[in-house]
Amino acid sequence: MWQSILFCICFIASRGTAHDIKVDCKKHHDVPETDLNGSPSKVANLTVKLLTVGNERKLNISWAINIDASSSYLKRTRILSGLKNHICLYNPPFAAANLTGLKEVWFSFLVDVDYHGSWRTTVYNEPLPPDENGYTKSLPMWVPRQPTTTVAPSSTKATLESLQTTPNTEAQNEEVKNVSRIVFGVVALLIILISCFVIYKRFLSYSGFEILPVAAMAPVSVVVVYPSLTPAFQQAVVALAEFLQWHGGCRVVIDMWQQGKIAELGPLRWLAEQVQSADRVLIVSPQVETPSSMPGPCTPASSLPRHSIPAATGDLYPLILNMVASHARSATELAKFWVVQLHAEKDKKSCVLPPELQTCRAFCLMKDLNRLCKSLHSQRKVGKKISSLLFKHKILYSQNSTTKLREAIEMLGAKKPGISDGTLNKDLC
Image (tube, one colour):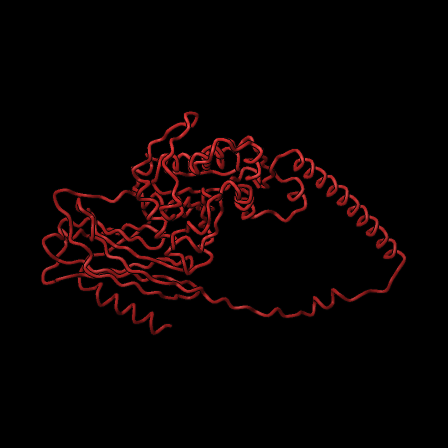
């Protein structure tokens, strides 16, 4: 281990001391800078190596800058590693540095590794040219799980002495009786409280309400991503987002409600930030159908408002598929992504999921709506105190609150108008 660290130090020193430019890299989340008049050349070379320093793991990111006429335009270098965004500034700037006789210079930066799985490091110089295609240099890396060491507990003499019994006395016998009375009273009180709790839940279940247990003032953070298909499909997605927001105890983020933020940050950065901060990512996926099983075009009902499909929607869906594919080897990271289908009534043999989503947990609406809501809240950490289990905050919704969502999915599925409300209610688990 120390030999590899020494080798890296010597490697960095041999490349870093050939010039007087120092680099300072800090976390930053601003918009990439572009310039129409002049931009530096792309990064000449890139290496990424996993290091272990003590008990911490770091990525040693080294990149090379070409020394040519475009060096005077170089202002900074951006490093995207995993979900982290860093900006590296040079002191002095390349335009003021003495680089006579050099063809390229190397710089290095250490990034903390805070999770295992798939890491992708992307580096590019700024300002960017108007056409950014092929301007970045990127390398993937698989970070294995860090082994944990277990220490066997040692029995101490004080612990053994605390378990020794003392001679019985009348005072101790009386104390044991008092403790027994207290324990009996507590058990009786718990039985009464649990009985009241069971009666309360049964009353709610018989009254037609669905119960979602959640922590008070802690809504589940959900990101909804979908492809840009027909207006009817988009209307069904918006209806699902509104149901989760107003009746499902969730804090929903969807591109329809943050078009200004997407325009400011760009689809890639906006999606990366939302996925990192969300509890769950719901991917509304269209089923890949055979031509004979595909429904005809349908027109949204007049009672449902029309929305224009955002331009960024077509970019977000391929980005989320690539993100899911990059986490395919990590079950922990992959568990964050769930798939929602809106054609549960169709023949499963005629429609399949995209290959990137076939390993994700899937739900079919309307059949799995109740299971989806309960699964979203069951993933949250709940306190183990008896008081929190008996008196924790509840979210209740009835079938009336799913009317708009049912109508949108019926329109998407092109159901016949003769279906009764009683049949529709059976779709809700």
